[in-house]
Amino acid sequence: QVQLVESGGGLVQAGGSLRLSCAASGRTFSSYTMAWFRQAPGKEREFVARISRNGGNTYYTDSVKGRFTISRDNTKDTTYLQMNTLKPEDTAVYYCAAGYNGGDYYSPSGYNYWGQGTQVTVSS
Image 1 (cartoon, rainbow, N blue to C red):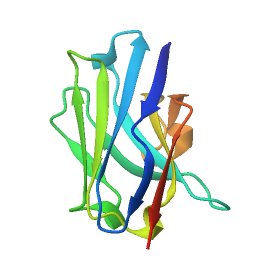
Image 2 (image 1 turned 120 degrees about the vertical axis):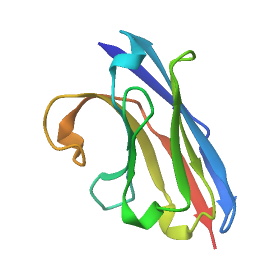
Image 3 (image 1 turned 180 degrees about the vertical axis):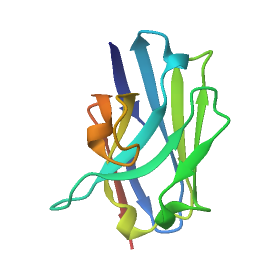
Image 4 (image 1 turned 30 degrees about the vertical axis):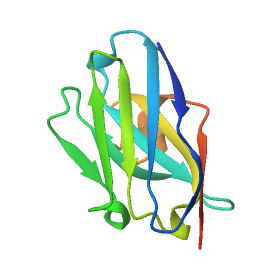
């Protein structure tokens, strides 16, 4: 099992930047594919980005390509989401996820472990 704790959320103006962090503890961090999801009020939780165990492969939802960057530091058991050129539609609670269970990489059901989430609010 792994425990996940997100940080770095906040209020930012449109066009600004934030960097989210997700610190993991428990089992070997480097054995996990890591992902970020987000959930806006009244909407379903949606995939944002994921990164392979060694960091060599990254994947993004179309709406954040070119603006967000997922990365990881396996020496610090931490994954990051650098978010640039933020838009009001990026406003959501952002969650990191781990423990891919063989399901859909792009669905919340594909992951067993979740953090508590961190709020990102982008004002226009």
